[in-house]
Length: 184
Image (cartoon, rainbow, N blue to C red; front, side, top):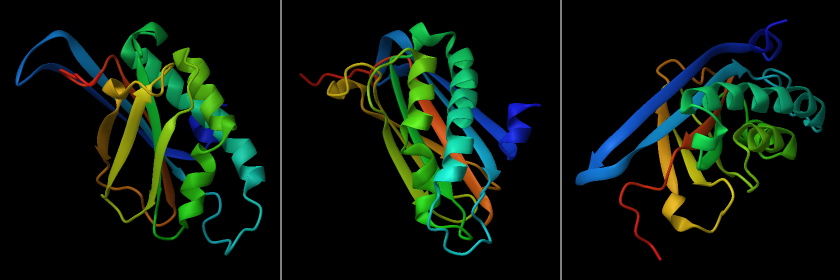
């Protein structure tokens, strides 16, 4: 069965940007990729759910593999990825912890790390919001998390998400440091 169907994904949104200059020409373009899955919130309409772990175990690993697979393909392979991060937003019919639960687990992060051949913990962001809000995906180096030249943020806006019963989970990737980064 198609993984998107198994995960309850309504749609997948990809974003790819190649920055060629920023105030002046770059030595090499910086590619930014974001892959966002808009999926059914498995806890929507169930009231307060004490134990979120059964759905996290079911969804998080497959979701990490799904997003990393698409993102790494858009980047041209794992060797092209130098920075990564994650973010999630939940519609107003859910709760903040629903977004948090899916991305802040090694079940999700390990699949993303494996996909990009990285070793660092992933920086993340989550929020409760209405349709059309912006999701900020923070990035850091995939192997050297304290290298501040790789701290980026990609902004994602999906015009019809998250609906009240949606979750949006996003993986962000970059091919290099910020344009003209010069922190020591």
